[in-house]
Length: 206
Image (tube, rainbow, N blue to C red):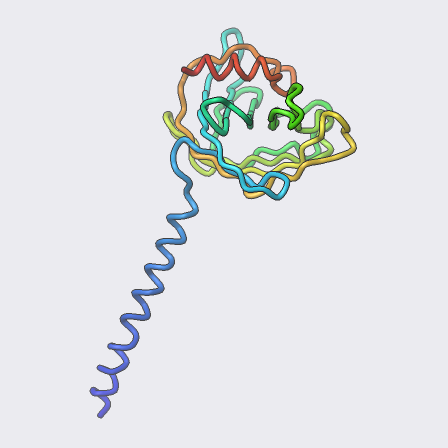
C-alpha cells in the first residue's frame, strides 16, 4: 500500500514540477530583451527603440565613456540617449546614480528623450536634471568587450518647464558595443545632446 501511494504521488508531482520549471524558465528568458534594443515605460507608455552603443577613452583623456543611443525607427522619430562618464577606470557591473552628487557629479550619468512636437514645429526635449535633484539611476548587469546590458530609471525634466518631470521606469537595454571614439558632443560638459548632436553621434556609428 505504501509503495502504491508513493507511485501515485510521483505521478502527480513530476508533471507539477515540470510545469513550474517551464514557467520559471520562460519568465527568466523574457527578462532579457533582444540584442539591439532599449525599452522603457515613459510617462506611462511602453516604448521600444533600436539601440547601439560606444565605449571609449577619448584622446587626451583618462575618462571611460559609455554612450547608448536609441531611436524608434529608421526615420528616428523619437530618440533616447543614455551616458555614463566616470573619471578614470573602467565601467563595470554595478549601479551608477546621480544621488547626492550636486553640481559636480562623478560619475557623470544622464539621459534625455527627444521627439517631434505634434504641431510639427521643432522637437520636444526631456533631460536629466543638471543639478542632480531629480533621480537618474543606471545599472549595468552585464558588460563585455562587445555587449552591454542593464536597467535604468529616471525623472526627466521638461525643457520647456523645468518644474515638470517625466517618469521613466522599467528601463532595459541590451546593445552591442562598437569600440570607436565618439565625437566630442556636449554630454562631456554635463549637458544633454541636442538634436543635431544626436544625429551626428548616430551617423558616426554607421
